Amino acid sequence: MVFFVVPDTPEWVARSAQSHFIDSGEPLLFHSDIYQSRLTAEETNGWFYLEDPAVDNEPPPMTWRKYSEQYVGMSIEEYAEEYGLAKDDWDKVANSETVFESWVEMCPRSETASGSAYVILDQFDLGRKYLRLDDLDPSDILGYVEFIDGEHPGSDYLGVRVSSPVALSALQYKLNELGSGIKLEIS
Image (cartoon, rainbow, N blue to C red; front, top):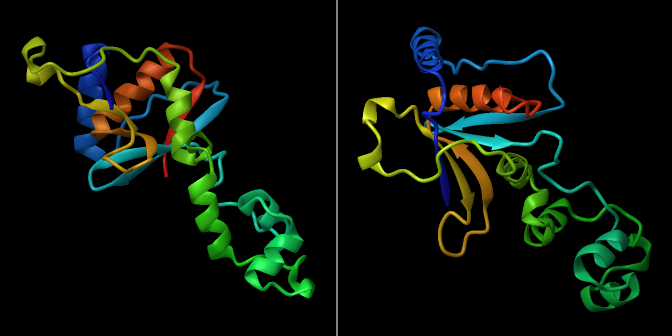
């Protein structure tokens, strides 16, 4: 995991973001007039998880024929023989749960909504990496952006989470400053 500490913004940004959060309960997102893409931030248990809304969080419906070729690596004839699928069902819509389970296992992590957000943001220099408390005054810490490549052993989660509404505000400010063309929105 890589942490980007977010004190690399002007002091007025921190004060404005904190005041706005106290008054409204929401992050202050400094949006520029021009942006090419957007990421959504969903709050869960005090954390903001970023996703790319341009990426589907589930596979499209598909026939058993397409499913067998795309996810099982068998021709429809081989699949039908092994799993007892009637010939009349080959071009019918496959069971969505079966397709979803295979998609989750086989989809490249960077092609998920959370993985795409990781790939998009990873290309920018957001500021100081890693947190060493001896180097910072705790009152200067607005929060941090955490790039997660496997949350724990056995996890293949790829994503970005932000520690606080103020850190989310600082992230949007920094993305604007870098000319990223990315707009953060609360979903």
